[in-house]
Image 1: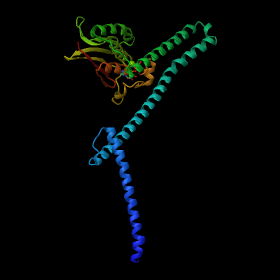
Image 2: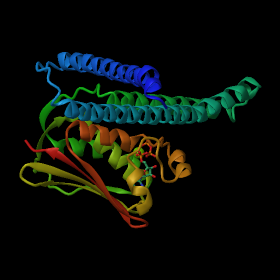
Image 3: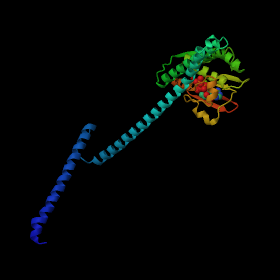
Image 4: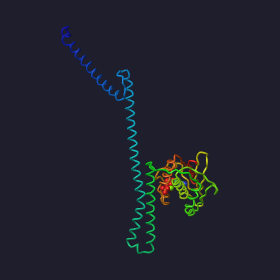
Length: 309
Ligand SMILES: Nc1ncnc2c1ncn2[C@@H]1O[C@H](COP(=O)(O)OP(=O)(O)OP(=O)(O)O)[C@@H](O)[C@H]1O
Ligand SMILES: [Mg+2]
């Protein structure tokens, strides 16, 4: 390479390339600066120096990663809700199908001549009416669950004697207990009172559900004992039965809606698997807790807390 070639061709080439590279770098820097200025303006940062650029980029990166993680969790949550919705609809239609098909069967039999047969007409009408009752019960429970899950339940707090309420509930369930030869025993004297601060109607629902379960899943000749323990701040309610019990592996799931340990047995007793889900929602709406201990073949003890008054 001669000096002339270097001077006239190669050097200018280098210089032009260098100028171009510097130009591009400046342009990029300008754009980044513009972006950072915008970001600073948006974030309310006034100084225009670049000393903190690295930190800004780091925090931007962390923000972007955090944002994408939030979106991922949101999508997961939406998928869960979607599955939950599908499962819910499936369960609802399944539960309603049984009484609807039963009613259809009874009505068709009656229309096909059964209406004139005195040995079955009343009986079939009664069965159809029972199935309608069952549907109403399911729909009411579903309404209650929807309201509770949407947080629309407004509690009407009041001070009342939970023993008087329990005596009342026991009176109304005594016949059902007798049918299964199960004694309902309140472990308190007739004079005792235990005052709590809660929604009386809702607590009635809780106690009724627990005692109904103790009869439904009880053993003939058994008993259900109800007692209230005053701990000073709270009152612990306890419903203990001598029934079939719940195997350990099912215990964590029994408060889920539609969950039944033995679907056949529960349905034959008129159960939908909504009772305990409603009970748990009501107790938690009171900001109290509910729990269960059970031994298969021996019995179950349900306990929940109440605010003492
Ligand atoms: N005291 C109990 N002893 C044994 N098993 C119980 C008891 N209480 C509840 N279970 C089990 O938990 C399941 C869920 O109870 P839950 O009260 O929610 O539903 P259900 O009684 O089947 O129907 P319903 O909606 O009419 O109450 C029951 O199906 C039963 O398997
Ligand atoms: Mg129940």
